[in-house]
Length: 292
Image 1 (cartoon, one colour):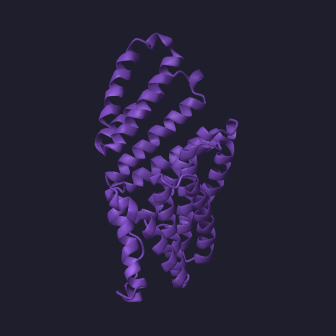
Image 2 (tube, one colour):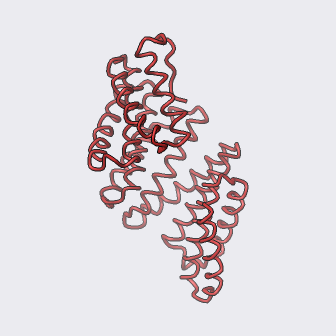
Image 3 (cartoon, helix red, strand yellow):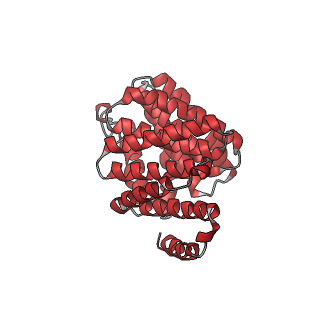
């Protein structure tokens, strides 16, 4: 993030000399502001991020009407999603939900008006994910289901358009995982397993093509952990323990080599090992707890 900050500061200086370029300047400045919001989010500087998002939205409101096409809408959605994140982490979930919903409505209108593009669909996947997880935090589980199922459909369309975009595919996979967990949250365990099991199979194929890369290994292990939990909910305890055991065997080498971040080590791997103590008889089955 330090290097990012340096690059964005240099870009800001360079763009001062480009103000006479009109529309092209505005589009470049929009990219710089969006990247700045990303950087502030990575640094968890949410007060500054909210202020920067407010400023970007006000700046976008000053664009000439004739230039308010697709790029303007995408930039506005980026700013709304960033402000929603800031509000969420500043403990204003309702305000965050309002921003996420406004971004999603803007993108839905763009989807109807313009030819389908991965740029629109990927942002709708983000806004939809944000809406769903905020509803979850507010205890509105049943309202999540249509949102997450629509996310899965949208993701399938996006990866059809951009089959080689790995980041987009990962976002699609995360949406599918969220759908599986959301279905389980309302007791629809069979459907949850049917959503998650094919995802594990797809992630297995990706991992086998690059077995030494930590990211596909970590992603597959996490998906197996989720599948194990869904099996447990369905009463399929042998299958659950098998999935957790496989997940632990994949993550343990990453932990030993220092390639597993603290969050995954304490939360994800810790959860798996806790469950395996139940499987091994070191804890009673009644000690099972859902993921945090």
